[in-house]
Length: 402
Image 1 (tube, rainbow, N blue to C red):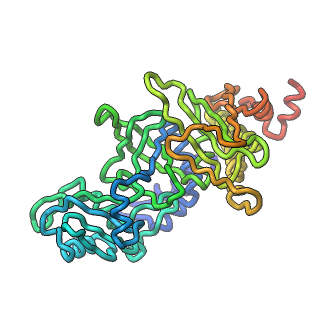
Image 2: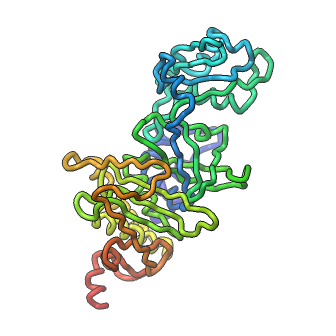
């Protein structure tokens, strides 16, 4: 679109009157139809403010939840129940059912711990997210009531302490510092139900002042596509810039690299926490690195000279880069990448794997460096371009002319 004023989404917003609203379908068509594109733009806007959602696989109540007789993936454990009248099966069941679908409720032998089996959220038209397989709705609401008083029988009280398997705690990129999303947001108490995942990655708009010696407030958190979809890793690599050490893990040739480790190099007084990312379900090749560099160079040109030709070049390079993801997702033949790293994983001595450190070469313009993996100049030579110079089809001639 030559001018932002002509963008259909903005024109639709400008035409709205104060009392008008868009339907859910219109909002999806205008703004969120391509989630990968939207989240990639957010990564570009807010990198390197990355956060890691580490999934708790060692819940201290895991044994109780697994042995209670309900489906563990749909069971919320509630203890320190308040007020005392709520420690009654019928009262608690009626209360939970008033919040969201509830299948069953029972107390333990002492009557101090309740097990709540959540119902099907589709009954209230709450679909499951394809990013995070979150705890059911009634468990989410109980977690909110844990933090705020609610009027139960006209007396303000906090419902108690709910617990669910697969809870996540957030770490600020490269640091041991814990991040705390706003508690009224469901990101403040997210859970992941898939056993194969060990962590999620996100990008946030800001990290506010410390709440304690090792906590900060996360605002504007966007969770990236999950490990196993490949696109989240590609988004981070597309815009990563600054003092980082980037190391590809796996095999440079067939089938390719299985993951990449990113470590900040400006940590002072502490050991930096690595970002270990996976290319699952596919593999990363030298051709993919060239496409990545083409996109980064095009972005440098657009940010240096914001013209329509540069914007169209970015769009073309983005399509080529994401075609890597789509092709790998659709691949049916060959070995599948099953690498799902744990939250604090580092490069080990896995049989047959290599660690190939990438050199970050300064670009002709802009701040997004060129990735070199292999012999010096191997991936950088074919992607270097000049602002205001010939377009993509003329680079061979330009190189011949020096």
